[in-house]
Every structure is written in structure tokens, then in C-alpha cells.
Amino acid sequence: MKLKLKKTEEFADWYDSITPTEKTRVDARLDNLISGFFGDSRSLGDGLFELKWKNGMRGYYSRKRIKDIDTIVLWGGFKATQKTDISKARRLKARYEYELKK
Image 1 (cartoon, rainbow, N blue to C red):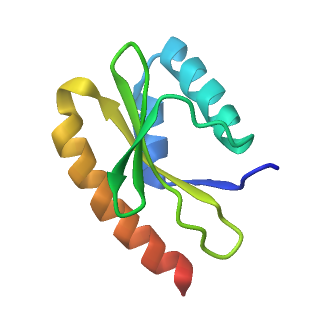
Image 2 (image 1 turned 45 degrees about the vertical axis):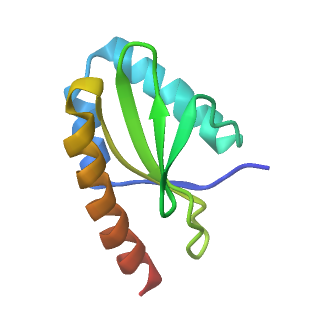
């Protein structure tokens, strides 16, 4: 079963800021998400999840199905900025879930 992902504009901005090697890793991981394999991931509560890479990269997503979207890829960051990245991902989750329900 393939999942439908939506990437936020904020995620796209973060993605544009990372190196080509990091982009390759993110792309491979998102391909796995589409296939339903989430790998090293943990729940942060309230439908927010964190993807982890060994190099310290983090990705944040919501698994709340809205209309035809299964997963919203919200934000990316690194271990060093994890606390602020999680706060930002929570705000983005609330905003995008509200907008998609309209």
C-alpha cells in the first residue's frame, strides 16, 4: 500500500538548505515512508513523529489522515536544534491540519 505524502513549504525550505548527500538520504527515507516503512522513528505524542538518521538529522511528520493525505512531512532539523525543531513541528502540524480540513 502506497501512502500519500504532503511536504510543507517549510520542509521544502529546510530541504533546500541541506547538502546533496543529506538530500539523498532524506529522499530515500521519504520513499520508504511512501511504501509504509518508517524505520527509526518515534512518537512525540498527539500524532507527531520524529524520523532519525545516524548523522543527527531529524524529520518531523504527522500521521493524521486528512482527506487523501496520509502523512504530512512538516519540518527537518538536526540533533543540535531538536528542541526548537519539535516546537516548530507542533505549530506546523496544527496549522496544516487545520488548513487541510477546510
